[in-house]
Length: 599
Image (cartoon, rainbow, N blue to C red):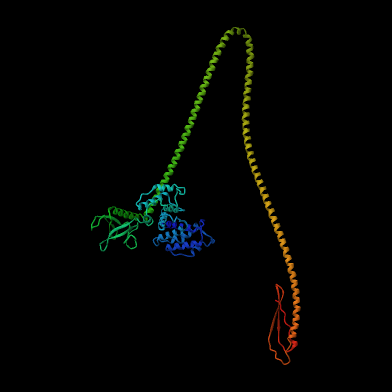
């Protein structure tokens, strides 16, 4: 399983988490955010317009996973450089997206795993799951993972609990999803009675071993290269290197030994007060180390040799190789099982065929016995008839001997009678031939009659089929008539509704016409009042002209403009505004009349 496949598994969870309606599609805005976050954790430059350019021919609607895959491969995964990013950050991003939607455990449960342990189990599930979507883990891989966790906790694996779990109706034998797996782990069936801290340490150890490709880690004494003194270091072995730290928190890395095909490990005799010693030789240096006991030395030397072998074979992960081997073994077992089932089916077919033939043989034997019985009965009947016939012949011979004398006398008469009998026999033989011919004709007629009956039966069957088709057409015609009647009734109801609506519209039109008539009357009244007001204005104008005479001869008249606004209320909706402009003049005859304006 390459890096692209591992990333796609995590990204698949992130994509499906954004699909809230479970339609297989996600909006472009959400994909933009997802793509930007992926570029950030994968340490590659993000092109903000690449998504829009990729889908510029599509509408603004959501994008399916098949439509997003070409963009994901071209603009993101093709730019990924292995070793330039931390895959755990990618897993944490996708876990954060999918856990909000799918991971909803019982928070009040006493066996609930911490969030960090659930995340690591999710990563382990993705690593061991099958390379097909939706992702599932087969029962063999579930058993393998649970065995690893139990071994890390130094407890015995409970097969009964696992079998009970797989026997449930909700669990498919083809595999389980990660949420069903986490639900099983949170139920406490596997970790019942074990402290949570021990479970967390075991899950972390298995996570680092399988996902982190850690073949082995622990404390060893290491001899310095310069001072040649011994110091205790925490060693972490991976297929490509052996790193050592000051403590098991792995914060302060003191060195990193690259492993390749030129490296080798050797066991050393005890010296310098150190026991269980061994050394790791590279092309440039030799590293001496001491384990706590012989078992640990054996485990470390075996693990280092395994790492060197993996590097020599071009493999980057031990557990990826083991997973492929387990998958091949499952496929071989499945092939053997299928072949065995085919062989069993073939044997069952042969057994059934043999039993059928035996049954036929028994039937034949029974029929033969019945035929033999019938033959014996027929033979006995013939014997009885022969004996009766023989007795009758003896009687007849005696009678013939007695009648011979009388018969000789009657011989002449009998010869004449015999001649007549011969003629009679010839006639009977001819009649028998004619009867046989008539019998053959009757047989032929019966055969023809049987053929005609078969033909008549075929015609009757055909007539019955045509009658059924006719009845079906009649039922369809009746349904169509009922449908037409219903549509006619609906059309009638719709016409009645439209008629009522037309009557209502007619009534409203009459009301509008009445209102219009009233408004016309109001307008006429308003015009009448307007004419009266105009007459009054003219009268006031005359009175105003009389009042605006000069003060007297020689008097001083100051120049000013006077605006008089008169508002006459004629109708609640109509107002008349009169504007009078008076210009001063010394000549009384030149005083202009006030201008009238309406508003």
